[in-house]
Image 1 (tube, rainbow, N blue to C red):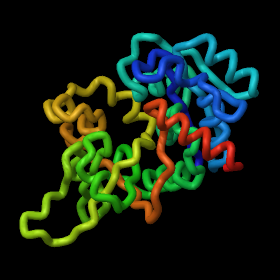
Image 2: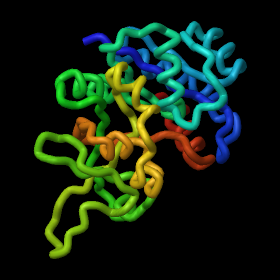
Image 3: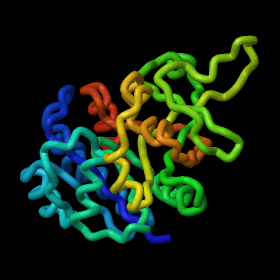
Length: 245
């Protein structure tokens, strides 16, 4: 299967300014992410950025990169522009790996791409892992997903779903923010109207569901190491690398 990874990287993070270039054990964060993605089966790994500084750093590490508009409101819009500038085929699978995921496991990238390739009724795919701690279930920063019997997403929420009225046990799933798109849908996604549920939950993937498109979900049987949103996350990731990840 032929797929590419595009990594959106913008410099204007509100919580961690200049986040793509923050040092992690001798290399900038976005470079660490790209090097992890290169360990997957992707035929190309490209950084899509709004910053000349990120562009130059990427090229200094021999990583392919393209400059995109500063006006994008989401990483999805940024990778869509990058895919156009790269003249990717409409049927090519494009995997969006966030630039703040320096611990991303290459096999997860492969699994998400394979899931979409093997799900012809779906226009995009993502993945989820089992929630094992109660504090995760009730944390609004941990996005949850419920699926049908075909492992297609029914709903994503920051709330603790599913809710068990009678106390019956069911494994809740933590949605992991990595996506694979067929390029044809990627190009049309930003043209879809923003949905009410998307606005309320502040979850972009709900736009696809609200407009009647199916999202395939790859179920993982293990925890993930997580990305970098805060200074605490950054120190955790630096600790992993210092111990020889």
